[in-house]
Amino acid sequence: MRIGIISDLHLGYGLGTDRESDAYEATEEMLEKMKDCDAILIAGDMFDTRVPRTEVFVKGMQLLMKPMMSQNKVRIADGINNKKVDEIPLIKSEGIPVIAIHGTHERRVRGLLNPVEALERAGFLVYLHCNGVILERDGDAGKERVCVQGMSGVPDQYSESVLEQWNPVPTPGCFNIFMIHQSIAPFMYAPHLLPVEKFPKGFDLYVCGHMHDPVKTAHDSGTLIIPGAPVTTQITKESANPGGLWIVDTRATKADQAKQIPLESIRAVFFRKMDTETTGRDEMINEINQILQSHSQSHSQSHSQHMEDGKEPVKKPIIRIKLTGKERELPLENIKTMFQDRALISFKKATEDEHIQAKTVEEHRLSVQETGKKLLEDNLREAKLDPRIFEDVFELILENKNDEVIELLRKE
Ligand SMILES: [Mn+2]
Image 1 (cartoon, rainbow, N blue to C red):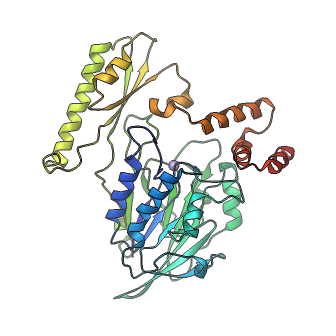
Image 2: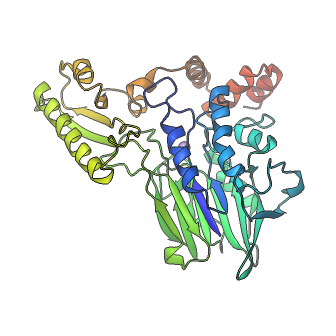
Image 3: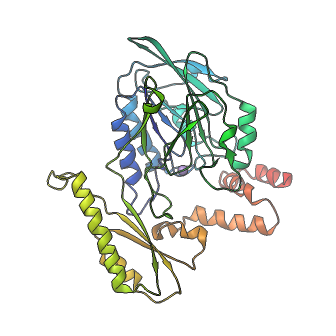
């Protein structure tokens, strides 16, 4: 079987900014490129928020119509660990099955429906959390079976124990896929990491959502893929590899099994450090011009007839400049305006708080909800309560579940 694998789509990311359609366009391109796949896996963070706006949610549904409405020979034959196959209401059973887990951005307090779970109830996909399904297809070489088991995102401090308790094992006679959405060592740094060595043994393919930089490596006797994010949500590195679409051919040899497919709809990202002591306004403008020149050259090589074809014009690249050295008055707004038709430029001052720095200027505009969340987090910290519960507390408050808030705080 040919399995298309994507992750961290973050639909709804950059709402109200120049980048608001980036996630949709990348997802649309990836789904188009998966139209002859037998199944599609989404390894979490399909949406950017746990309760997407209706506009974003319906966009997600419209995107999923494409695989749902195509023809396919694969059927979902069986469930693993209490996944009841006949209870999955897939809209059109001949469509390409989409199998998804929820990510950290979509996780909700126990008892509240998360958006990926909601899509399963509406018939758009199969949702997994500590369970799995077996896909079956008749081919020239006989029946082929692929088993997909998934664990949705849980708070990092519980990831090891949840996985241990679930303890998935490969299904005999199948190509076995294990899918997870967590902070995994050694692929990222976070206070609580799940070491990759704790993954269950014997799977043919390991798929990890959450990390946004793509990776392909060997693991145990199989292959490990981090699909990565097709939209850049954090720009902090000199060179960021865009994530995106991977296609796995279960019949190919291990070396040829997984391939990343290049995407055209992804916005180019450039990151530069500039020392304010040696770089003035003119040097900055020069550097930006150079970036734009090399960008348009490399772009005209790969998509020569783009503009002439009357297709979409090339997306403005993101240029992020980190200012180091002593703080100095520089006409930053002026430079941004100067290039506004050619690039999305943002500056990051050395003195800014690290946490906020990782976002672009547009993203700084916190929504009312985010501001409320921040206030609550600070208050909980001051009251010497575990700030890790703040997200749950905040969500329960939003849902008017006051008794449950009190119960949660009492437990602490
Ligand atoms: Mn993500």
